[in-house]
Structures are given as structure tokens and as C-alpha cells.
Length: 400
Image 1 (cartoon, rainbow, N blue to C red):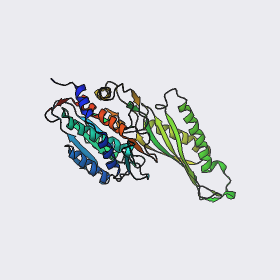
Image 2 (spheres, one colour):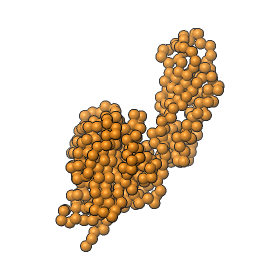
Image 3 (tube, rainbow, N blue to C red):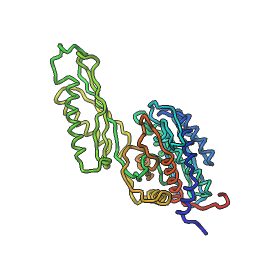
Image 4 (cartoon, rainbow, N blue to C red):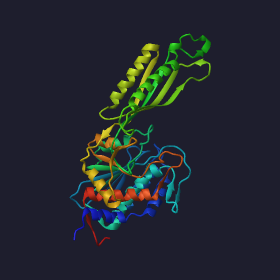
């Protein structure tokens, strides 16, 4: 008797080992990989995929941040599912990695964001083999560095996508855990530079208050605050509400010297169909108004971290992940917006539908970054079942 996809998804999920996941995550976070220095961990991840039977290699287009590409060949007749994640962590010190089996926790930089997700990918593939569940379509695994802004600019992933290293759909093993993230706001980092002509001087020699860079900053902050209040007044849920945030204000080098320049830095999050060009025009208008009032020179630099995107709810990958969640966890997995910016928008730009589903990232980037074994297990089980539902599968009873 041939098992249903639901039964095969459950077989694979049952083969997931929580203890092995805790060990694997600990092993992964024990190899540091700050943004721009991911080579050692990329090699470890490549070797791990090879040990699981994938055809795996390093793409060294970016030598210090190589990408990992692995492929598990299917038996034929099914679509290719891509499992994706980033190898870098924020370059912020953390206490040494640790694993506590009694408390069911792994601690250390990257545990939640997102080496736990990469470990879940590996365990999902391992579980398929242990259970004798053979996907019909290929499983393509990609992992890349240069993700975490501002040093990360997604060039590694975008290069893979441009070279057609893609599946027919993708699951990114981060962000979503209690929901299925299928849309998100775009986000850009803005830097506004305010300058005046002439050298620095003592305050008593200065006569033009309006052309003082800090006065320009005051006017700009008023305008930015007013615009931010307009955006937050929108009726949308906060995860989809557009925002304008000021994070840094810098000027001057001594208490009684008139500064020659000032800088404001922050973020602007926006919904589709707005683009980076629309946001740039908004900032240029604000800056032109201040320049006309003060005679100061204002320049805007806008770095796009990720564009806005929204996935069609009818995409097969959505149904696959939701079916897997019902099978191996129970209950429904609702569609929702992603709270942060990730790589699904990059996939969408190249015509590849992508969703987020990984471990709970509540502690990501924090001074106590950690992930539980229960979260790792749930993520691995859902990913394993998603492979079955998306790629199709058969049961090799003898292998099990």
C-alpha cells in the first residue's frame, strides 16, 4: 500500500532528533562568522551537506564570504525546492557558545539568527534519509554571507540568483515560526549630510544662526518627526505600517566651535508598490525645503536593505508548508507579514516565490542570543514535511 504525502511527512518528522539539533547548532555557532568573514563556517556547512549525501561545493566568487551550494537529487518527476539561509552573524561580541541539554537551550552568537535555521535544514534532510523518504524533486540548499546590514548588501545571494542557482520555490529558514511570512515592508537606510561653507570658528565670531548645520538638523528633525507621525497614524497593523526612524544625529567637535557639518541617519520602511526611488524623492523634497530656508548644502544617501514584496497566496509553496505544519505540529499556520527585512524579496525579484519559516528569533542580535531545542525540532519537522509536500516523495521501506 502506498503511503500518502501526509503519512510520509509524518514519517520524516518522527525521525528528527532534538539532541542532534542542539549539538549541530552548538557546533555551528562555535565557528565565528561575522559579516565579511564567513569562510570558515561556510566550509563547515559545505562539509556537513556532503556528509548528508548532497552534491556540495563552495562558490568562491566572494573569497571571504563564499556561498555554499548543495543538491540532493530527487528520484524524478517533482519540482525543485530551495532551502536557503545566511551564514553570517552580526559582528557584536557575545559570551562563549554553550549547550545545556537539561534546559534545552543553545546559547551564543548566531544561535537564533540564523545557524539554528541552518541546523534545522540539515536535520530535515537527514531525517528524510533515516525514514527512507525519498523526494521526487531535487532539494537545493544555498547558504550565503554578506547578509547583515550595513556591511552586508546581499551581493552574494543576488549573484546566485542572477546565475539561476534557484529552485522553483524557496523556504528561507528564519523569521516565521508561529506564522508563515509571505510579505514584508521594504527598508532603506538614509544618511542626510548637512554642510555649510567656510571653516570652523569660535561661536562669538558667528553671526548667521540660520546657516548653522545644527539649525539645519533642527529643521530636518522637525520635518522628519512630522512625516513619521503621519505614517504611524495609518490604520494598518504595526507590522505593515510604514515608518520613518531617526537613529543617529552627529555634529560638532568642540563645545564652543561652530560646526561645518552634521549627519542624520535612520531607516525608512515602506510598503509595496513604493520603491527606493519613491522614498528618495520624499527625502530630497524635505532636504530641498531646508536648503532653501537656510542656504545650507544637504545631500541624501539611500542604501536599500531590501525592497517591499508580497507573495500570491495561491503559490504551491505556501500550501506545502501549511500542509506540513498541520501534519507534524497540528493546527493552522496563518499567513502574516514578516516583522524584519529578509531575503524573500530578493527571490521575488528573480521570479522565485519564497516564504519564511524557521526558529523563533526573539533573541536575535541580543546580548543573550539563544534558541530552544523545541524550536529547532519544530522547524526541522516542518521543513522535512514541506519537502515531502512540495517535491512529492516515495517510501523506500527497505532503506528504513
